[in-house]
Image (cartoon, rainbow, N blue to C red):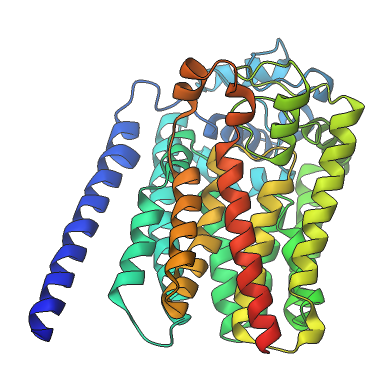
Length: 427
């Protein structure tokens, strides 16, 4: 009977994984690869900036005018003509730190379409590597390999709407997911230099992972934090040397203030997005930055400070070293940066796969049906795309209801914080 039950379970898992892989291959890869608008995604901004760096024209074309920054309209600015002249369709403004453009400069040795294909292939490979890392992190919490939680991690990763959407958008989220997952895996093996390198590289691409470096110092992993700080300083020096000091000043003084205003659009699934939809009449369909009334400004920052302080407090270092505390604390901080960032588009939630994988391992270890049930609700809230349904069928309640992804993230935050606090108490 036991052998028969095991074979049946393996058959069911094989069917689930086959369906999952087929669904992702079609929805996540083939449909986007063959779409008429395949070339019109976020990579066009990356390519424009990287081309400006490689051709020595970063001073003129790396950034647009921050005072006229709009993510939905094509402004009449010189960098637009520069992009169009190099075959980039409907170019959009580059809003990342200069280092990311430097990192992608080799791709501009290819024409735009070929470079976009190469970027797509790289993202697919990074996603495969990330799933492998997430499975290892989830199963590692059990101390032995178990097929069910491993299959669950693969299932949630590849059926996740933010995964599909990030692939469609040509986003940098796959790079960030791989780096933060690799950093945690390295930390657990005591490879502080590798962990520091991964976190520094992630922070040089997008600033929010810097919080993880600070948290490592707080959590007692000061050697890894020091490696990360050192690597980050090196990346910053290279960036200034190649892209110029003026571009860094422009990014910090011109772009960060605009980005920090947030947006009311449905895609912004941060606390700021919820507050803008709740307290302003700004459109949910236009990708424009909020005018940020003072009430939204204050509440956004109070909520961000409260949630970040709570995440650090739950994983306080004086509770003693403990592997599960490190993992869950790390995942909690990753999730917190998503919730409190002024702009967290729905595809940015691909980073939530890390705390999801950790909690799948935790639920399998604890065997709590309640935890599994709540975790399932949190996942489904983040995993589905019902934005159009809410806009069409819930006209009166659509503005606050549009933050359903945020609600799933907050529920996952509570689950992770509770598990982390429980492990701290046990330590």
